[in-house]
Image (cartoon, rainbow, N blue to C red; front, side, top):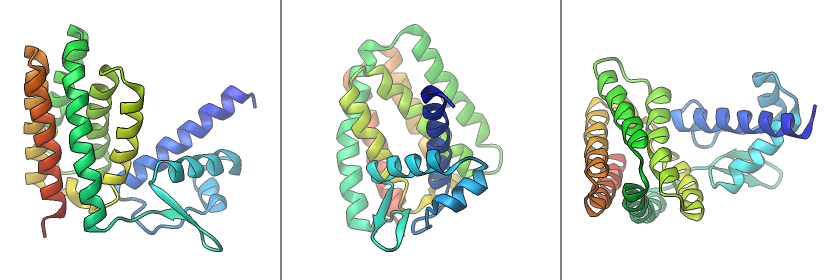
Length: 214
C-alpha cells in the first residue's frame, strides 16, 4: 500500500468513526479498542490507530493510561463553554462566507436545506441528520476561506456532539434547526453579511438551549 493509499484509508476510517460518534452509535465512554475496531471495519490496525489518535487530537476521544482510548464525554458546564465559543466563530464564518460565496455555493446551500426540509416528513435518523447538519456547516466554513477558523470549528463541532447525542431524534429540534439553516442561507443569498452572522449566532445559541434543556 502506498503512502497516499494509507492516508486515504486512515481518513476514511476517521470519518466513519467520527460519524458513528456523532450519530450516537458510539456514545460517550465507549472504548475505542484498535483491534476490535479494525476487525469491525475489516481493515488493518494501523489506519485505525492513526484515526483514533486524530480523534484524540480533535478532543472527541480521550486516552487514559492503562485503560486506552474512549469516546470523551462533556458535562453541562463544559458543553456550554464549547457552544459559547462556537457561537462566535460560526457567526464569523457566516459573515465572511457571505462575501466569498458564489452563485454555485448559494445553490448548494439552498439544496442542502431543501433536502433537510423534505426529510422532516420522514422518521428521524440521527446518523443521517447529524451528517447533513455537519455538511451544511462545513460548506459555510470552507466558503469563508479561513483555515484556522475552519480547523477550530471542526474541533468545537466534534465536541458539541458529545453531549446529548439524541438531539436529532426530537422532531421539534429537527424542525427548528432547518428553519434556522434557512435563515442563514437567506442572509448569505441576499448578501447580508451582518444578518448571516446574526442568524448563525442565533442558531448555535438555540442549539445550546435545546441540547441542555431537561
